[in-house]
Image (cartoon, rainbow over all chains, first blue to last red; front, side):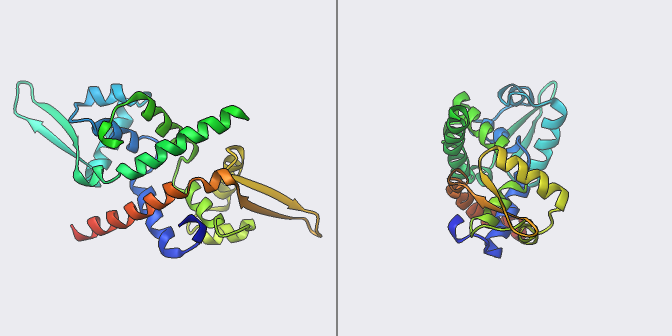
Length: 112
Length: 112
């Protein structure tokens, strides 16, 4: 695909994807949720380096893009859990390829 | 991979990849260069919406990460061309998967 570069329609869909996933945090949050429902504090622990303010903003954005679901449970006090949606899970292959490329990239930068 | 979520090593390599590719522009610039060498003005035209200031910053960062190469030709006046490196081309599968997911995402958001 990349070797056929420059096709405007392909550029558009890549741009759509990058806009929905913008920044360094969204895919890491989705990855943390891919192992099951989690509460805010647990996500914050799993996604190393994120601040509570940014995590809160990113969770709202992911929910608006239908990539995660927010559930409020009627407990005392109320508890909130986040889970990944089917649409969020459809990013699996993107994550896989980023993972493989990230390994190669680290290796290359370390060697030189 | 995603379904085995939470593995710290996988998180690390995804984080490496996301840091090298941070923002919405870098992959679009690489995609524009995947069809051949280009001069600054041509890249600026192909990557719709980018400002010259940001393009200039992103090109420097991509060069530092060995994803593109900058060549100065001894002409009058001197001309500069940018090309994608082999390492940059190794992002092909990431681009493919982002393209496919971007199509699905647009379809989903439009329908609902």
